Image (tube, rainbow, N blue to C red):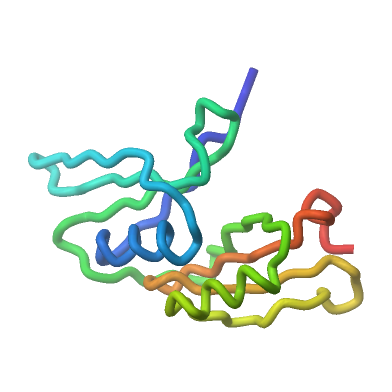
Length: 136
């Protein structure tokens, strides 16, 4: 048996990132650990622990690095919601940055929106009724 466990992103300010993922996106801080010798902290956030079959996000903070060049290889994380229109209102009210308002994809029926976390990582919100159908 195999299971996707997590996706890791490097963050410049761990507290700010934890606040965004928990308060703005509604995830839970599942666990956090520090490595004093190598000067980094890992925080795992998600809607449920990996033991439930759900993948989580690993936020990695290297203590001596305040920001990263995102490059052009990273795409986005995707999260399914029952109502992305309502979720975008919640995100905006919590101070989150909506970079693409909710609506259908160009040339398709899947409804999506995009938000950006404090480090500039893109997060796609997908209407759950079509989350497993691709973007057609």
